[in-house]
Image 1 (cartoon, rainbow, N blue to C red):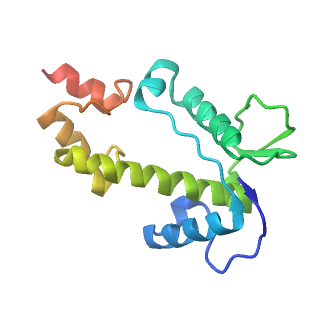
Image 2: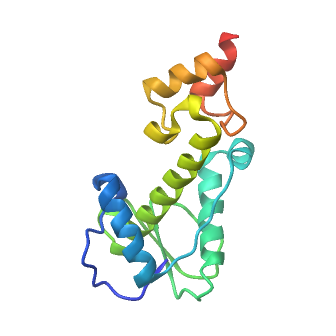
Length: 165
């Protein structure tokens, strides 16, 4: 993402620190005030390469989706992307950088919306409530129903539910 301005009239912070309502408001503002690229990898990619490598792939896809040349890239954590741009890694960047915080909001809201769509297809898992995170309700649904086609087989609760059979 490339911010066109740093002047926001809403809270832009680490996505984990904002309520769903504040994230949704920020999401809409960010799209108006930034060039946004989105990268999405599916459960098969995550299972084949691991969550860390899949995250890197999604970030590289987001850079490619920007359609605007970036002069440099800042990244939350220590991820090394394959890009010709200089990279600056910032530990806990989502609480230190406006750009990283905005990107974390876009990523979180995008993922939550995907999980809401999956809830329509697989309501028995309760994705609307837990968005795929390993809550007690999610683990219970995995035991009761087994994994759905969109569950990552490398996700520990899914592996555990498969061993119960």
